[in-house]
Image 1: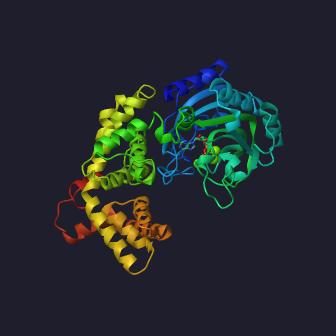
Image 2 (image 1 turned 90 degrees about the vertical axis):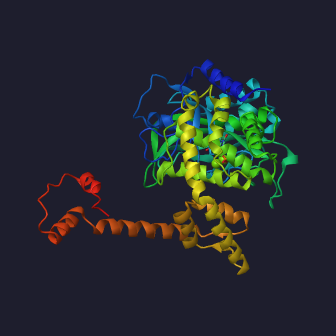
Image 3 (image 1 turned 180 degrees about the vertical axis):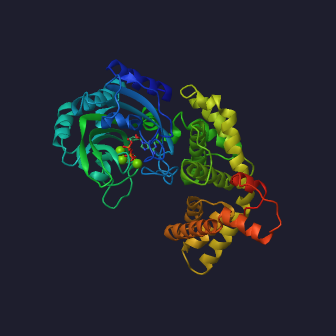
Length: 476
Ligand code: ATP
Ligand code: MG
Ligand code: MG
Ligand code: MG
């Protein structure tokens, strides 16, 4: 059985042997790209190479890229723990061609790697292509011998890949693994690839044929040279090769779940009851990597996504009886599993732990009281036969107890209720507007003038900047 470390290594070596340069993972904080919250795919660090504005000394590359899909265009935060295959943080294995090879070689490399190097049985594999990509159909047919029953044509949503609202994009072709009919779901139209979204059909590898740059107005401009970008989730291919039914059962997650068991004294359940365990393992890993790449908890942007991730895990920890900071302890466990591939999470472990711990302490101060309030609210809504927590109430939980909206949604869902997210946003916008207005009405110069007018006998002072005024405690 291959370990995840061996799979990562095999992938890199296979593509190196085929002339690809091994490039290190980029940071989770995209370099110089305000259109992107976090690095969400292997191609991000090569965006400008695809666009033709940056040149590299190589035309083929292979990477194992750290990715986070929480917030932003690709957002899996609320899926984590519910499916067998989604994480907030994961590793994407990828091979890239910058105007070098195109569809034919990309298909050949992927198929050869999976079936010959890794030994997967072609019977278990299925292909999807973009609906009118006849060229991809012919190439797949030639290479695999599959007909239209195993090479499915899907639409934009599944088989046209784009990194964000703007940037490089193109039709794609994906390889899926059938876990077997015993994993079939009871979808009304039958359990089939492209019909349902269940865990029987595991998307393992996406081959993107990079052909366009999407502009803000939606138009597609052809790229200078057609290129290839591929991405395969390490955790997913590990689950296939390790013969386990989900990513959570692989060597990348099992030890983390066992660690949560040791913290709580409770045993992990692979079904619904194991949800908090999975989220804690996932979020502990994600927080470790985000802080390792310089993100700190805050009230906006990237820092707020990190804060939401930590708080969500802390709330779920409480449901397992963890009332003292615990999430920070995951950092050492993640380091044991992944420190060799990513030494910086070990080198910075003390700082990462301290950062997570202080965020936990901060949230724990209001969590218990907040949960009491939420429980009361839910009880009274239910008593009135209502099913929605209104936006203003959700905003109060946020404002008073530091409950991010997704945390309130989690609790609501556990109780069969929903949250008015639009109402929450409206209440939030209103608060921002008010606080902005309040700040704008008091201008420091006006204030100083008012003070002078009120006390005409004060000695004359020179204005030395707001810092000085603040020091005196004059301002607000
Ligand atoms: P899915 O349909 O399962 O959500 P996707 O189509 O959104 O996956 P892509 O954008 O095509 O995923 O990313 C390329 C590959 O990265 C996927 O084929 C999968 O192996 C992996 N991957 C994507 N999202 C995740 C995730 N949240 N956690 C783990 N692996 C992921
Ligand atoms: Mg997805
Ligand atoms: Mg998909
Ligand atoms: Mg995909």
